[in-house]
Image 1: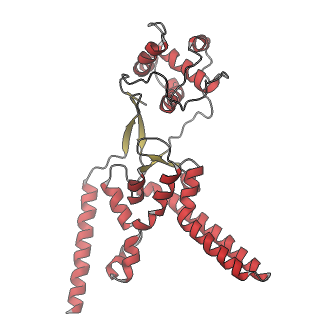
Image 2: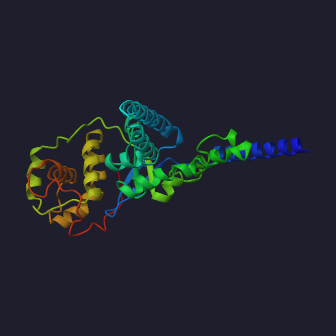
Image 3: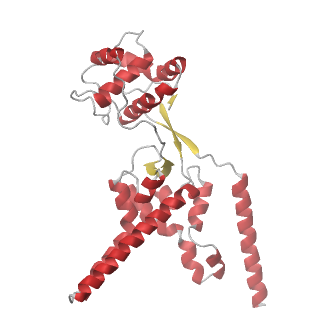
Length: 307
């Protein structure tokens, strides 16, 4: 009787797993999302699914193992000089910090990246596209243990030992548009793939027409963070666009800026965005490179532009 009940529970478990796998395979989960800023600029992101995040996790795991190995060597060293008790206490604290705060500390000071994420090209952002803060970084990493809970219960329910790690996390990723595990949902974060750009550093936009128009922009002009990012992305990609396409893309952002900056209505849209890029990131004038403060007149009426 006990064997029959055990076989039936295993069969029910595998049936559920099969139904979940089929449902996940039949459902279309779009890995591309748009985040609209207050300036009505839509930034396009590719969210990272579990298979993109696995190599980064394994790299970080290897780094943590290496750090733990160094700590054990340190314990052996202090034991040799008769400070074993001190070494054990230090080791316990070190393992606790390494286990629960490794990811949080790196993502706080490395702007959403750990060594593994940096090598693979991933970054953690807030769901509204902003950089994460320390609270979000620590919270999403502390709650990583919740995503592995079925493995912890495997001692009491043998079927769960077949599941392995991150079953809850994988279900959460499969059921959310941004591939968010429980820690991401609690912290309001997502993991995105960083775009590889062939342009490194500041883009050269020092055309005479650009420099002349940049001189006409008011000295107190300050770009928001999202506007600065839009200008940067446009400057990097404009050379890959035809002149007509440049004008079409630049028009949506340039029209409200022309009105706000009181520039002539016939101002060239492409030249204006390049001039604003120059003033924001290149020109050595007070206030030109500060792209993080809110301007006096927000661009609330600007039409949506996708970059």
